[in-house]
Amino acid sequence: MKNFSDLKANIGLYKDWIVSWRSLPVRPWIKAAQAYKQGNFEKAIELYRRGLKAHPCNPARLNALLDLSHCLFRLRRFEEAEQALRQASVAGPGEREVYLRLARLQLWLGHSAEAAWTIRTCLQKVPSDPDLITVFVTAVVEGGGAAHLVHEAQELLRELHYEPEGFPRLEVARLRLELLTSDSVAAREEIGKLATADKGPFEAVVSFAQILLGEGKLAYARHHLHRALSVSPEHPRVLRLLSRSYLETGVFFEPDYAVQLATRACQATGWKGVREMHVLAQSYMASGDKISALLVASKAKDIGRKLLGSFPDAKKLEQLIEQLSTGTQA
Image (cartoon, rainbow, N blue to C red; front, side):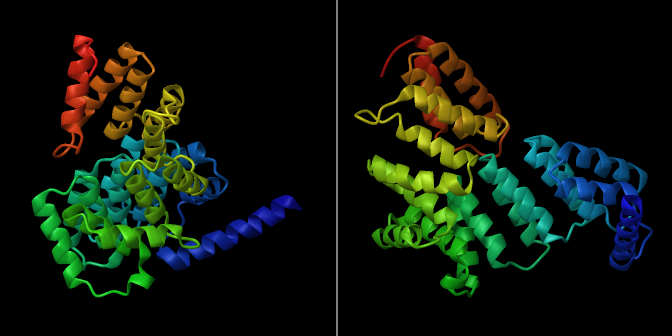
């Protein structure tokens, strides 16, 4: 009886495939989609790749590559996930979703200049929209606000007409850019309102926590970071900021816990996040493990060299390496 039910289900899937793609079904991709839904990402990856090799010109190739990249991302195989997305950009050079996913992956890893470049490339091929501009502005802010990129971001925001209530993530990105360029008190207050609102945007909660950290309001910052962790338990930026909060001198100083959190942040980026490794190096140093601190800081520097531009704390990382190498304390 079960075999008959499976047969009926497969027939239905094949019919849906033919209607959607106007081609014969690719059985490995149908099986891959089932494994994907079940959370069996290893099996799904194998099946997606088998189908891609056997059917390089199938009209569903782009979707298969997108699903493949997601499976690889879930397993923290970030280089392979990026490669799949770049293949997807060749298969569908005008598909905005490909560029959005690639830029979001790059932001997850802290590669903000790459993310900004990815969205710039996309905007040469498709009209701008709130999602694309949100990611671009976020990448500009995360990258420290290079002057030419800030100008582009401001121009894109000026040309876009939108209701802030309808696009809260875009509004957070805009406010962060305003805060970066003018240290606006009003922008800080607006981010705070969005963060403390019921079901406030995740980006607002994390950004407000980062502001509070900079103001030395550690307990309040941690409250919001733990709110963010409840939504995304392995988000590297949240883990990194939380780790930083335990490096501040005073009653909150717990360098061993900072090491644990920063290690989780590094693992969440597959040891590709320069900022996460920088904080881990600082945590090791604070806990007295200078050898581990130097090893991690040196690895961060090596990865940073391969990125577009430089991350905002590059000079501080250099100073940390010099300090660790000479064995001196600040």
